Image (cartoon, rainbow, N blue to C red; front, side, top):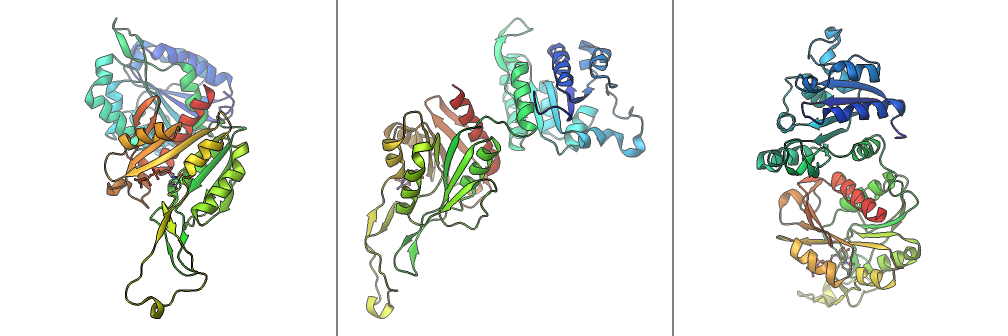
Length: 402
Ligand code: CTP
């Protein structure tokens, strides 16, 4: 771990048999130069003594809510405030429920509630408890608030069963900590082209046809890819947004302009993400002078012609290995359409969303999407677009690492 040096890591340990694994995590964090503050629930302390953690971290382990030295300085929230990252591992079903409901009845829950630092939660429990709808709803609620939940692994459990529920490997927990402490560098050295916003198809010098795309999703993806170390090129139709810093931005208007801009970047692109809402049609003729009402009369007919399909053009000219991602917006369940699009257009992934749902409509800051790929359909809860973007970049990083 390289980013942990000099950082304040709160390791919140709760009562599962997997507690012993956290001893090794604490040791590794200390070795990488982090200040590690262990907080335990009382039941965690039944499995491994606080003394073990104390000896490794050279800091007193906190258990009692009001046992901390100076309660006048609001000691019970101090740790959450000081933290660069809070890691709840192992997290029991009970703790997930308490965190999901915002309890503050012990130091672990209070620390999570009081922090503005990233929170990582690594559940560990018996398979049926993990699969129970109540636990899954709690996990979904935490994820929707931006908590990074590291899914447990499948394997033999302490109960003797085999199934999902084993605590994630230390390597996965460490990777999540690295990521939380400054973004992963998973896309370092990669060139990512992102398109965003609507296209604008001129009727005459004054009038145009366009669509309701705000560009927020594409801009968020560009920023997330930049945070992951990529060299990002953002090709954007007209939007009201400020382009993210550290991203090379090209402003275009029409679908044709967008196509030219993409094809110019394509030879060096490792990834192309088509988040733009490209207008499907454009006026056949574009008047060079403003059309006058007196010439048009009381009825105006607009003849449209189909725009080139940019995704098809990209797939046809990409070099082997370039990942191409499309978006499918539908009014209704978009996953079936997305699956068809994935196959027909030979894409690597399609982000499907239902624009009829007002919570994820055009212009909203939130989105409820599904990632559709050869791996299957991964449905995400309603999330901030910035969080959807981060998840997409995570997915991309995994894919490039294969
Ligand atoms: N797209 C494209 N070229 C176009 C139109 C769209 O590359 N001329 C891309 C968009 O950037 C997006 C995806 O295709 O990634 C959307 O697919 P599309 O089949 O056009 O979706 P809809 O417009 O929703 O399809 P339809 O109108 O046929 O329902």
